[in-house]
Length: 490
Figure 1 (spheres, rainbow, N blue to C red):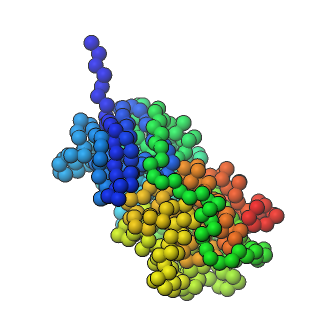
Figure 2 (figure 1 turned 90 degrees about the vertical axis):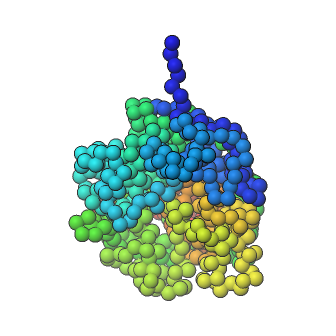
Figure 3 (figure 1 turned 120 degrees about the horizontal axis):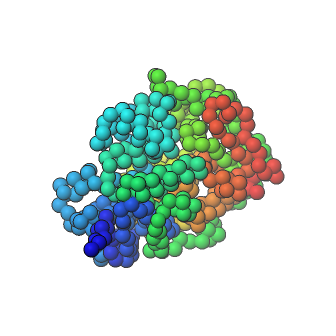
């Protein structure tokens, strides 16, 4: 007589609600089987992250389970005693959130980060793990610290760290965000191999239909559970009270000449940008593309003053722009704003969304207190979020909602240049289209210059006016390619 192996985890009719009655998850069900990859998809705000976090017993603060059960490896994880829950997480579960780099100690080197939690601490095992997650073993990467890695490399180090514990269940929230197409394919193959050959139960949340089709055995589609965001055509009119004006001519708002930059220190120091020229035009979208680790994020961090250049010059509106943000004046800081790749790590968890958006209104624009609330409401509406979100905290938002708050915060300073680092990589197709429509409106109505780092070549080809392709120190010299010579906003 044969017996069916018990499921690794089962979620039944689960509903989770905020104190004000807003549903985060509504009647969700999911069964995880050993040896299978389970994908959870759906629009931003549908509850994908909430569902995955429930599987590790991490219901959002202040939220309540109003119905349903969660059984994980034979335990009712929502009622498990704290010490037993910690042991289960430490020994049998692994969860990688949308910002896995935030869990990497910046003072520890990659090798120690991985072996710290590893069941096998030998160097052979370390190199095997690096190879599994498609990281180079011949570049002394294990001796670097996280800040010397690209976003995609940090994400794979976090994955290696999770796999080192040999968990029974692996939960991944947007595991391919910020990765190029080739790496997405490799990660899909890795996850299939881990599940099918090693009997690991894997659940992942993803907006990437191609990735899901490549690696998932089963797919759960969650429907929207929150109020529909305003239409983009309606919300764009609320963005600013400034009158519509024509985009200025072809003169660059930001000029970069012979830019060189390095990452790392000591023996691990390496050049990622060499002799790079770039002209960022008002009203135009300049896309920066290239494989993971080629220096895309380093470039935008250098432009905003968060990473020092080792050579070359920058100028803003024809005036010299000093290298680091500490030496720039307040007006220069206001004019160049960054929307980072991982918004959760960039938003203060102790501040409400309203407080976060009001801060640049006070610091950069000196807007009186009695006018800030209405301006915050305009900014939220402009990025497709309800005005009521001003009272929420970052942990009460989905990844896509946090990304839009991050964009709204950058727009609050009324910049001339918006630097966007993979801002659509963790968004569903509809939300990503809304973000790109918002950026297009800003470019055409206010002459905003946008620099967009992206691995999505289809998106870039549809929206970019100029494209800068990075491929390592030997191939980054020269100027960006003009895609649409007719001018900005096309």
